Image (cartoon, rainbow, N blue to C red; front, side, top):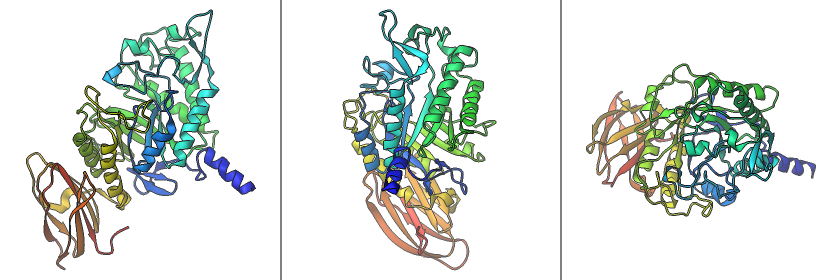
Length: 465
């Protein structure tokens, strides 16, 4: 009975594995989670799963688990949006009046509208946060907890708790472009106090890591302030049992990471399509994520291709913004229509789960971006090829149809192959071949006809995981 009670307690605080998700010691481009190698993949809601009191975590997390996804990204509540922000219908980051769950206590003063007390933390908020992370833990889902976000527009600063107009402390008498800097000691003090509180409250969980700030390349956020937040996380955990990864959002699309902060394990990019950022940072001993998508319409095609290309180019993480998750439809069944700045929905999630199974079926930790074994390509116009490889196992993705022919040079031996429809998961063609004993033997493989994109896996006999 005592052992059973202890197991329930460990589950409630984040599982019995103990060691938080971290970089894989053999290949820091991937992760080690609960003793197993991992990449992170999801198609999740627009970040309001904790801060929006009307959002029901259970059907949301159940849907992610059912698709084989293992990541969710949530904002802390130090930032919120308003209805109509970025043309997002039923935006989970724009809770209804009275629906914001904030880290800080909300109070009334002299009959005025509700304000925040930045010197008092809201216990109910942290109970909600830990309940979310615990429920995610039960389902094997990692939580990227985003501590801060820039104030993109004046109307977002107007409703922010850190604005002096919205708190009883007189803190935040600054332009919105100076909120996430070191210029205002009163703001920095409250921000770092929140960081210490969040890190302490979540320390027992193995399925969480901290992103310093969403899109810090907007809104005046400084590198010095980001470094201070990272330093605060590290210092706070020195007296605690867990050591959690820190993520830093670097740029939209691509950039070379210069002078990487040694405390940072994961460097996130948004809209990283095509995935040039991976080759640009080939020498980086850390994980690289495509942590936000969008602005390419509401259809599935682009986001499916973005996911396959990024992970088959050697990426560590793919997170598709999925606007079909709303407070009214937490199971992800809401229709996604223009002008919503992105896609999502059940059909897309089915397609993304095909990629999840494909890559999970590979010994990906020992694979690396290696297209050189493809010696000849006959491809459709504008098609691109990305490949991961290790001796005896080769994973290839081709974006652009309707037919492709590849010549591969492999070590001698017997091989089998399968062409996979990326929209249905069906094996479109399978077969086998021998490579002659002499070194440098080649084989030409012709794809079946396909509509938009296709994947190919080649495995030496006896070479599967």
